[in-house]
Structures are given as C-alpha cells and as structure tokens.
Length: 212
Image (cartoon, rainbow, N blue to C red):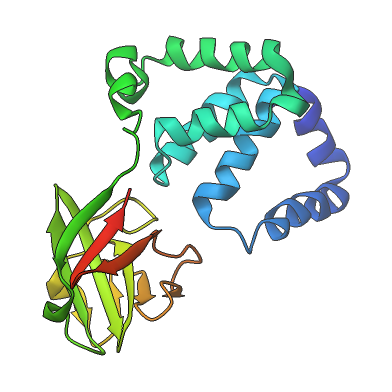
C-alpha cells in the first residue's frame, strides 16, 4: 500500500471506508475467479506491478488456468492496447509460474473439436445422473426421456473432479468446497454461482455423442 493511500486512510477514514465498502460490494454477484480476473485487468490498465502480481496470484488460486488469464488479457485489448499486455506478460514470465512455461502452455491449446462416442443412449437411466469417462474426460449425463444433457465433471471453482459417489439424486456436490450443482440445469445451487460446463451432445443411431 502506498504512503499516499495510508495517509488518506488516516486523514479520511470514514470516506475511504465507504470507498472500500463500495469495491467489496460491487463484485458480490461474481464468482471469485471472475472477480479476480477483472482485478487483474484493472491492474494491467493502471500498470501497477505489485497489484498485478497480487491479483494474478489470487486468480490462479481461485482456479483460473493460464489460458484463461491470457484470454482475459487479449479480450481486454481494446482497452489495454498491445504495450500494456506485453508489460503484463513480461511480469508473468518474470514470476516463473510453472503453468505459463512455453513448453507447458503450448500443450494446452485445444485440438479441433470432434464428435465423440460416449455410450449407448439406452444405458443412461431416465431421470438419473450417470457419470462416465470418454477419452480421458469425466462426464455427467442427465436424461429426461429423450432429452440428454452432458456436463464436464470438474467443478468450475478449482477444477476438482466430482465422482459418482458425490451424486445424490440429481445433485452433484464437489468434495473440496461443497459447491452443489443441479443436473437438470447445470446451475450451481449452493456455495458458488458458476454453472458446470455443458457439452454439446446428440443421439445418433442409439449412441450418445458429445462434441469437444
């Protein structure tokens, strides 16, 4: 914290208290990951080295992936400009964060999407949640008569994999921080606000296919 800010806190504590209360309240409907990503962008815009390092660390602890951080920086290009994005990337490289290493991050670029054969559609019990694996990816499948919904099995908070043992009826509960999700919609119904990632799906000749 700067000397000037410390001075204002002492000279005008009530006024500054309102300011910090506003900052806290303004993000209350955002999940922690999104809130910290926005803070990362504001620190890049202001080119505040210490603040950028602080909020980048918080965003990563809340489950942001290196690719999500880079996407946030690139999507803010109209406001930041290339020079500030390069400034931020230089700091990231200086921090030596393993997930941002060139040999690691290039492996995270997704391959072109394709339809993948998950399982026989009839093997998904009507009105229930089925967890399965397809080509190394955990999936939850919810069926309502002829309608199927497929979700990634990882909690959006810190990417924890949710197992079949964590399913009760149509509710999936993350074992790490007890975020709960409704399989009928994918919405988070307890603790957090971010939904499960839904994956496009269809039934062809009795087989359930998913696209990613």
